Amino acid sequence: MQNLLLKYLNERLESKPKKTIEPGPVITISRECGCPGTTIAQLLTDKINKIFKEQGKTQEWRWVNKEILSLASHELKLQPEKITYLMESGHKGYIDEFVSSFTQTYYGQSEMVRKVMGDVIRKIAVDGYIVIVGRGGGAIARDIPKSLHVNLIAPLSWKTSVISQKKNIPLNEARKHVIEVDKQRDNYRDYYRGKNSDDICYDISFNCMNLSNDQITDVIISMAKQRNII
Figure 1 (cartoon, helix red, strand yellow):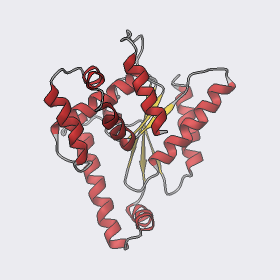
Figure 2 (figure 1 turned 30 degrees about the horizontal axis):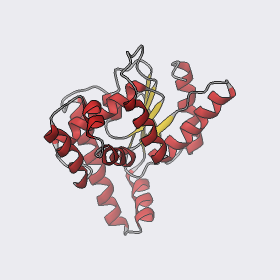
Figure 3 (figure 1 turned 90 degrees about the vertical axis):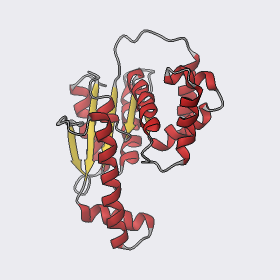
Figure 4 (figure 1 turned 30 degrees about the vertical axis):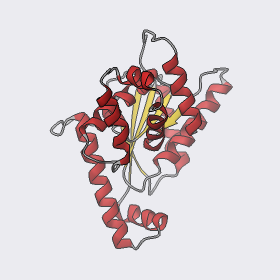
């Protein structure tokens, strides 16, 4: 999946800029710590692509998360002209700071990282046929008509248990981790939607404790069809 996305980004950047007729379609997935965001994204794109194939469509949906975007930034570091085009900035220091900032903590306070990553995600969302996991995607792509914004939630006790098993750490440590990560993600989303904004960045929420991945993706697909996203 990582190589596919890098190939996708490079092909898009190598082509001449085209006038966007209509942005999207795009589906964003916000998730609380412990909820299966990437698993849902993978299953969702698999199901959508199966539907497209049955309909004779050649367009392929992809999904992207923070790890792949970080990898893409390092790959593009070797090609300054492409980074300049992607970020719409000719300031070398601006680009260098963005790339080097990925050595910092994922939720670091770097204004540069958030600004440029927002630009990257916006361009991917506008280009369409993409499922974006996290990174404030819901707030960034909220105004795109052909978009659907999903939020994955669960009780703290359930998330704590998931993280405890996943990281093989005691429950008390897992609980602290969940609370901290959820707080960081809220702050990250607030950066894009505005801290005092009452705008809700998602259209539907799913309780991951009570619903299976298949149930969640089937509902998302049903909603996407009703809104002419797929």
